[in-house]
Length: 318
Image (cartoon, rainbow, N blue to C red; front, side):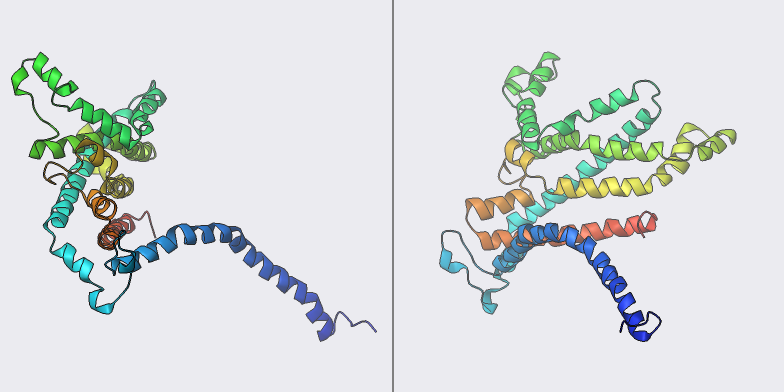
């Protein structure tokens, strides 16, 4: 005898398929991202954990037996780095390089974004031309500027000689001189990173409400006053996003430094990532290189958290 649909047995049988379908519907989105999550775990998660383990060992590539963990020597790599003058110099160089490049790029990008926002004819063409530096790989940019600043056949020295600012016998060694080596790297990095920051700030400028500016014009505000008291504060969320993206990208500078100066002269332009490569690849000290990598990861996380807090204050992230 079939169970009555109004009876408790019938109601349970009727609701069971609905519950199963809800469970399947809830699991379905996770099943879609599961392959990608497994791939990321294998490609990113495992190497990260492995490098963390290696950082606590004295592992050297030419000494396979050195890959052993002991509590007595777990922090030896980190202690060596804290007592390493080159590590502190590379950290200082990275901070100076990051601060100067990001701030100068931000000022130039802000000016370009404000100029482009006022262009009425050919703005799309100008934006396309602005993106040209992004089409070049960092290695090509490094080779290009290394040729520009070459002491003998470089474009910069030849131009200075042609206008009479320097003599042919007094050519400037841009890539070898101590302060000029860092300046040339900064110039190359600024040229390469300005387009992204400009596009972000331009998008923010074009999205600002026009009513506020119209009210300011009625009140007789000048162009500088409108920028200082309206445009600049309203662009704060976009500024923090641009600064965060550019800072994390510029802090990983490797290609340009490697091609242009290779950390010289006398390690005066050595950055964190070039020094990590020198330790791990050239000197085969994987344990020491992994420890230094994790220090940079820790600093990057702190830096990102700081900017995330600023984004929260700017009410772009909740």
